[in-house]
Amino acid sequence: MGIADAMFPSARFLEDSIRFADQVTAGTRKVKRPGEPGAIERATVWPIAINAARKALREKIGTIALSPYAALDLMAEAKSSTKAQGFAAEDKALGDLISGDQFRASVYAFMLVQKRQKTTPGAPDKKLARGVTKVGVVGAGLMARQFALQLLRRLELPVVISDVSAERVDDATAWMRAQLETLHNKGRLHQDTLNKLSAMIQGTTNMADFAQCDVVIEAVFEELEIKQKVFAELEKHVSPDAILASNTSSLSIGDIASVLDKPERMVGIHFFNPVAVMPLVEVVKGEVSSDEAVATAVSVVNKLRKTAIVTADTTGFVVNRLLAKLLGEAMHAVEIGTPYDVVNASVQPLGLPMGPFELLELVGLQVGAHVLATHHGAFPERFFDSPALRELVKQGKIFDRDSKNRITRVSSQAASLVGKGVGYRAEELRSRVEEGLADEVWRMLEEGVVESPEDIDVAMILGAGWPFLMGGLTPFLDRVGASEKSRGKTFHTPPIRGVS
Image 1 (tube, rainbow, N blue to C red):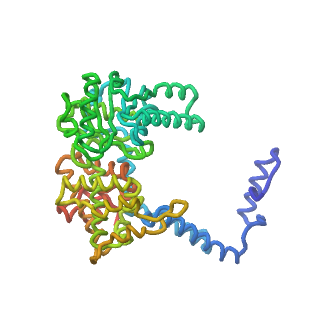
Image 2: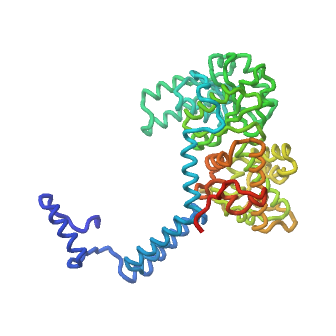
Image 3: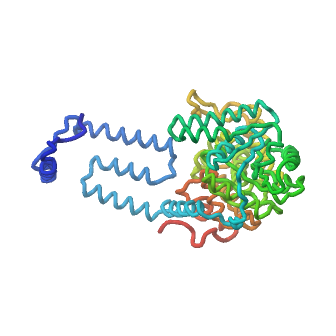
């Protein structure tokens, strides 16, 4: 089979194997491998394999990460180099990588994320957190049922999930139990635990069933009036000490809580989709949110094994505000005449896991249009609304895809929305995006949305997939000079970069 070069009897295995290895290293024994390629085959097949690997890397991770390509280059050179030359090439490649920006940025990002799993700057004393014995979820849509399941699994407490539609409630509870069954079938959940958790799921259309809940989280449609109506009714049924939370992604916690008799019990707990995968939760402290409410929210998030950042009550909080800046610039560029591929090329150096238009399709075009409109309404001088994106909502897509859901091209309908003007060059748009993001981060720090640039970096790494190798957003903006262009100084002193 070619698995081993030689086999020895167990009685003399040690002596025979040492002798065999000695002879091979001394050159007195030639190891015969019938399947080993000859010189001609090595000269032709190896480059083909290397090129195939290079293509696979480009498709899977893009071209920003340096180390995978450095490793591939070393493998390509190994075909015709001596052992000494190979070791020398490895030493040089390793030295270049260790002294480079990406290594330094990766270490910063790794250490920061590890630290924030244990501490949450800006959070009140954890001793103020209320004990939680039962949890409620208002809404039975996809987002609500996802975090209801996470609350059930991690806290192992009774969960009540409600909706105005009994059919939606039944569908949500059936989905939750099916997910538990799937985990059990995969060997990740013991039968006793499956039985216990399944029995803890309660579906209802009656808010009176939240009476014994210590924390109730809302996830209904993203309209202020609807959320206010929900909480005004909910407060009639819960205990005076219950903590109320909204999963809103952009609305003001203070505005939602304004209908409550006790608005101080209100806090934001913003999960990211998909809930089971995304490790970040934004805990939003309204102007009158009590320390007890915020501490309880942070405690619940930590028990879910997720990382919390505490933010002030401002439009978009951290992640959506910065993504709205990026996506708004991308759509505006299209509207004034910049082709989609030029927009994608302009932001590719940021290293994000996908381009802005693919991200819009992922989050949902209607959601994206709502986010841009909300931010434009709050900050009209800095954020773009997008008529083109509202038109794309009607059409339902930006890209055409093949049978395996791979992007093939921009759809003809989306292409027709490119403006007739000259548009931006890629370098010009990239500078606009970088400087716009830097300005927005500075404003968030000046407004006290979060305490430090590190909060921004944790949020964007864990909530937006900003690459570890970039170190997060603020080190990147320092390295490209955008932070200094915006305020004449860097976010980090000294900047997080390699040894020049």
